[in-house]
Image 1: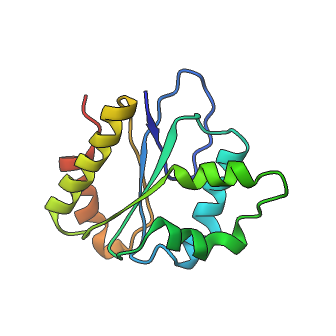
Image 2 (image 1 turned 135 degrees about the horizontal axis):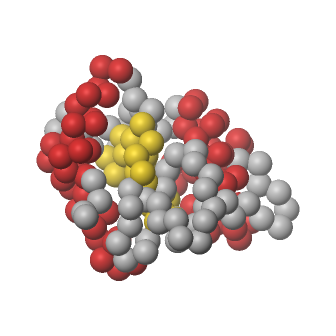
Image 3 (image 1 turned 90 degrees about the vertical axis):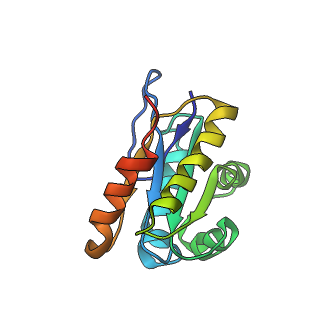
Length: 152
């Protein structure tokens, strides 16, 4: 079973099937993402504290690429000599989806994107990590519930 994870959850069990999508503030280059979220995910991945088939998805309003996110995080990641290949592997597992917080259609498209990964790699549970302004929290959680939860 494929695992998709974004968030700061360190669980290590052979039978655990975790999936996850990151819904962050509009700017994934912001301080929270580049100084805390991505470095923590890297450390969990680096130290094998996540299932090996975990994938990371970012979702926000801004149109940005994983390469740009990586560039903004680089100085906070604390990659040590000998970890370069593992670091490359980490970024290969990162994906990004741009959409609105108040448009159901964008969450339906996100769901289709996740289903595409699951068709190739097997079904996954999904864990949603939310770092959102309070003004959009209700809309986002309603859209997640109605469109983006893992199929049963």
